[in-house]
Image 1 (cartoon, rainbow, N blue to C red):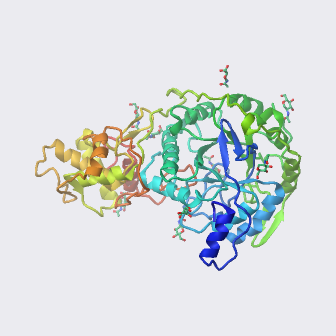
Image 2 (image 1 turned 45 degrees about the vertical axis):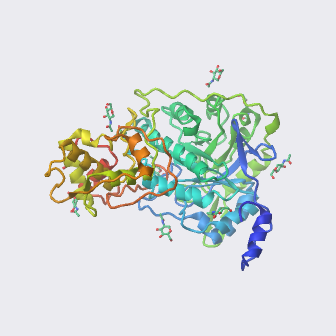
Image 3 (image 1 turned 45 degrees about the horizontal axis):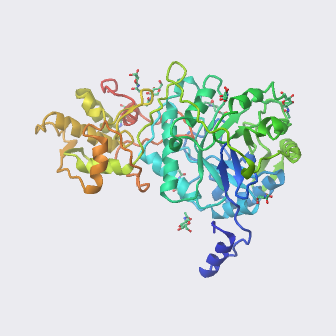
Length: 538
Ligand SMILES: *[C@@H]1O[C@H](CO)[C@@H](O)[C@H](O)[C@H]1NC(C)=O
Ligand SMILES: *[C@@H]1O[C@H](CO)[C@@H](O)[C@H](O)[C@H]1NC(C)=O
Ligand SMILES: *[C@@H]1O[C@H](CO)[C@@H](O)[C@H](O)[C@H]1NC(C)=O
Ligand SMILES: *[C@@H]1O[C@H](CO)[C@@H](O)[C@H](O)[C@H]1NC(C)=O
Ligand SMILES: *[C@@H]1O[C@H](CO)[C@@H](O)[C@H](O)[C@H]1NC(C)=O
Ligand SMILES: *[C@@H]1O[C@H](CO)[C@@H](O)[C@H](O)[C@H]1NC(C)=O
Ligand SMILES: *[C@@H]1O[C@H](CO)[C@@H](O)[C@H](O)[C@H]1NC(C)=O
Ligand SMILES: *[C@@H]1O[C@H](CO)[C@@H](O)[C@H](O)[C@H]1NC(C)=O
Ligand SMILES: *[C@@H]1O[C@H](CO)[C@@H](O)[C@H](O)[C@H]1NC(C)=O
């Protein structure tokens, strides 16, 4: 279906498929060389993109209920909209959240047939890194990996975003350490699974205080940990602005040395209506194409935020003035391109990691690889574990008690994105983390018979370590203060009992759910390793 048109047809014939497969060949994958995108044949690829999802705000936030509509599982919607996207001159769509368990094949085939690539965000409204309470966990790993699994086979997947506007001002920059860990782990996962090389990037808002540090942070250090491309959500060209008034000139200078492709992951300021999209000539013109690889207009659907190109009602689509204006501008945009073979990569040096200080709080040392095997091995090895099925409140209370009694018992589960000190088990689920701290306490009490009880909420077990676990546990160290460098072999997050750390909102997100009680909030903070001492909560 996805590797080549010929193979698809053969496979369909062999399996006696009941419906006719498209005879159109799948699109050639887009490859990255230096700071540009190319077709495999060497022609440079500029993104002419449109954001395609209902109910997603331009800043990435969405409903607080955690629900969303997966546009790529809606084949009726795709057949309604893809012809219009094609008419517009679109070659890429950005989708903010999909449900990995649904069938995307019909929409993906229609996109292939229309010559349209996809940039897919990995988070969704119920599974993302929370900017106010950042964690990178085995549960998030499994959810993000499921999106990679659902999409990796389609040759028209241009790349993934591992986060959208997560750190969005100076108060929450430490969250970037966790997002960069997500980038690192998803890049590694794509390799482990033997998928084609697909880039993993990050999409940022445009905050003057942090924009440079952010761009440098995600590009700095070991290339295996760094983004493959940078997406800028930028709304600084409003009405018939200009290259200089919009600040595009400065942004372009800032990215002149960037070692991976950069593009506008959202653009299209709407403070002057109707939009004329005069920025299109700048984005695809000589001033910018040496540095930027095009952009993605926000957005297809007209909603209350008034950014739509079309309005949709059931099966009916109505083109708005913005559609016509954008279509005209894109038709006039004829970027002069570099051919891959003639392109000598000059931006070979990554940016330096920003120092932590008043404006930047994310350490260059990243949180642990979210390897679920490490967590299951750890629990099996313990002599004292939590009872299963404890409520969130009881779990919070136990964290509070044990970490309060013995701070060192919790070193293996705490995280600090600013110091870059992370417990080796800080990515595990709440049950696993609680069990680790109870076991540490028990051991620190020389396994006194009373030290593994906690009102019947803890129990002893005969811990064991299989040979496949011993290397992981040795790396983690007996107090959980080591660093495990082994990547997981599968997605295998074990969602054992314990506090849910689900978040709300695409890519970024707000506070724990409003329906969360105080104790649940305590458990939440504890599970996230945010609260260390324990006496604060209860
Ligand atoms: C390379 O492939 C793209 C996409 O199929 C096509 O648009 C372009 O014309 C090709 N370039 C050359 C030089 O054949
Ligand atoms: C995101 O956009 C929504 C709707 O436009 C707005 O209510 C919210 O305050 C914005 N959030 C941030 C963090 O900018
Ligand atoms: C994904 O779809 C399945 C099947 O319809 C549904 O049970 C599940 O709740 C959906 N997940 C999300 C996060 O919407
Ligand atoms: C992807 O393709 C491989 C090889 O053809 C196949 O084994 C695998 O099942 C496919 N995965 C999905 C999710 O379609
Ligand atoms: C780009 O690199 C050149 C040469 O190393 C240097 O002079 C210049 O300051 C750099 N510009 C940026 C924006 O980093
Ligand atoms: C390119 O930059 C020059 C110098 O700043 C400016 O005058 C011109 O308008 C820019 N071109 C476009 C298409 O924005
Ligand atoms: C991280 O460590 C710094 C320096 O020790 C400290 O000021 C800060 O409160 C810590 N943050 C958390 C979340 O523990
Ligand atoms: C990140 O910073 C915020 C704001 O200072 C703080 O509340 C939170 O505990 C920090 N989290 C981590 C994991 O460092
Ligand atoms: C958990 O604690 C909160 C805050 O004290 C309380 O409102 C809630 O009822 C408790 N939940 C249960 C199930 O005991």
